[in-house]
Picture 1 (spheres, rainbow, N blue to C red):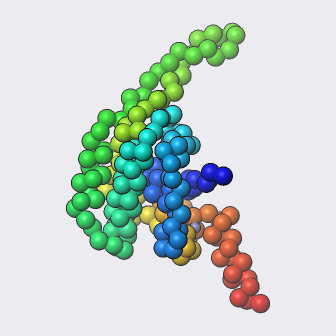
Picture 2 (spheres, rainbow, N blue to C red; picture 1 turned 180 degrees about the vertical axis):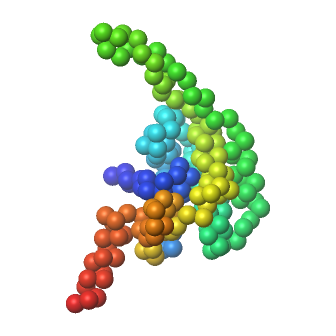
Picture 3 (cartoon, rainbow, N blue to C red; picture 1 turned 135 degrees about the vertical axis):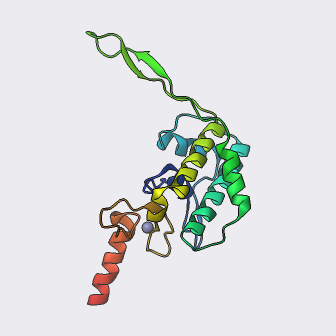
Length: 187
Ligand SMILES: [Zn+2]
């Protein structure tokens, strides 16, 4: 069965980084095939793309550069010029142009404006991801990036909570497990 992708990062770039999970232990690779990449892009709302092995490789390389840069931002890893250049290079590619389409809405109002479904290339999608990473890591949200406190999880997210005290990728997963552990320890 295909892996479910976590979309808990609050940002395209962090959700993309999260396609490799459990980074501190066995590493859970969710982008195993070009089809996995196409599926992620679709679920991320970035359009329908066709992908090949080269796209998959490019995607993984970008993902790991974004991960290393994010960890450097958190002061938990080296800041490497090669990663900066790689992200910049990817971001310099074209991104998909938004396009209007005239769609049929209802019988009474047969014409309505909508958005044409994007059918970008893989390179255009990776440019969107890279640009989001640049905006994130150089913008005001950089200070709110957190890693899930479950040491096995390693998912990253932007903490948009007012208290700035979000600890878990998800209260349903890691948050609930931590709660169980606390309860058991108390008994
Ligand atoms: Zn987690």
